[in-house]
Image (cartoon, rainbow over all chains, first blue to last red; front, side, top):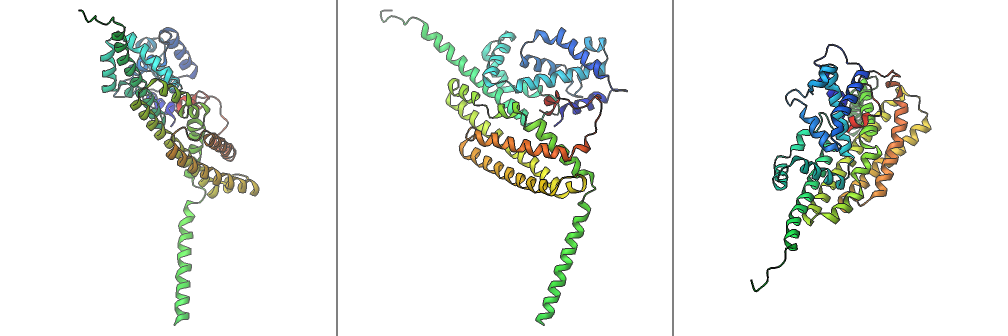
Length: 174
Length: 194
């Protein structure tokens, strides 16, 4: 249940000493200021922060942050921000999630249909969950993301038809 | 002959009782495991299952309104089905954690805490009422769906919160007053509990 401690155990395994709490807070603030500020939506932050995590070890890596602080402090700061992004996404309504998903899709500059089919098939958000997250919270968020994706898809299929409807009807004479 | 059988039966019964009492003894009181489990149950309830933001999101009716207005029928059905599963899982987990706390209170608390008899009695009634409420909620959610009983949800959360407060007092000695150290719990740990 306590995700923070689980990640800590990961980060601790590579440490000789506990990182200073104030240093971790400073690293988190630095990460917020320099990197995360460019990602206004929790979904973007969640996916970005999950991408800094090594799938084999569960440890987080960020070269810039590690250079300014230390690898252990960077790991803990990234893990903390990841958990916070998850919490924010968990607290988002379905309506808000649809908006976030649409904005994320638009920012990817991909063909909307390919984006949705890839997300439906691969479910990339499944690997973006922080380690040790409570299963109920994960199930809830994944379910909401699936619904949001389905609504986005429904909107998308409606839109081209609406667009077609806007075309002038060909005259019978033609 | 009948008297002999009666005495033999009585003897066997007494031996059985003795055996059962002997088996109970090791689980008593003193074992830290029960305390730790109770503390964990309390932690799960207070940080993971009962916070307002968690309950509000799981039973949020604005989600239902949005999905009904924006999603086609199959998506609406999928949403209701999924939410029902999650609501039932939430209720079942609350019930399980409350059962753990109840077990702790009934078997062990008198050895460690200084709860009075009247407090213990009212706690027993509160536990029974809460467990019954959880069952009722499960029934209502199963029959009527995830949005069938918002008032019962609110009442269940309220009752569970009150029980958590009492349990927290009796378990307080397990939580040493410590300075903020790395890895310490803080309000931010709501995120962690999720």
